[in-house]
Image 1: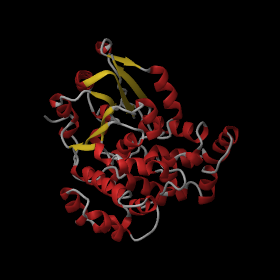
Image 2: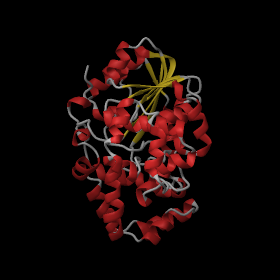
Image 3: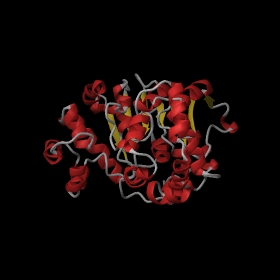
Image 4: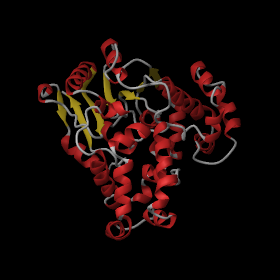
Length: 362
């Protein structure tokens, strides 16, 4: 059984070497302690965050073999390395990555080992730097941003300030015509579809892509604290620095390592996993999966989620540009948790999304 996105997009390369969704937001939404979770894979970070927060079990659903290799290397690195070594292998810190890979190699599953043995150059760079989406931001940061803002201004943006000072800096220093022009060009549907995401991911998007993302970026730069935003720091500096995402923080490392046996990976489409599963799931990390689906197929998948979800199970997912949420036809099956959704959306550090949805199985 193929999912809709399989019919339109190519799945053979690493699209995302990191998860670009705010795990802090996700953990508060799903409250995973003691829950059986199903989690869209991507690079794996947010699935490991579920472990750190006490999930009873986590089933990672990921169709792309290259993404599964990323998840597999993370699993081996958590088990074989110390925290600092993990960050070195990822590419966050400098060090001998090939020797660290050798420490992990025997722990890798056979498919992941074959994959990474074939790409030693990607290990040397840091396997958290080699995705299509990361390369897109590399181009933005290294080639285009120097024409818009100096490193001094970028460092100023990322320094701690009050909300009032952030607003003043944005209006007087940051929000120049060059910034707006670059943003509208680089985050247009055309450029983003060819350099950042697959063009098929924009099938159900209407209106200006760049305008919506620019508005959310303004929110992130003024209402939130840029100094503490790992995603913004990676985009502008090429590394997280002291603002690590949830799964990479030192305080979560040991609990992820100790609970690795609670992780399983399923390479089938989510629709097929849910149709054939006897497990009742308590939490669903759905990433932005509905972004790539028609309203009709969104309805079908939500019905399957309801059938495989325990009463009180929570769903969490992002809208980037295509608006998706529980349709009225499922009003007796899923309950919107609107108050929680709105609260978490306002504090979401992954600022490129247009909505964050939390719903509950009735």
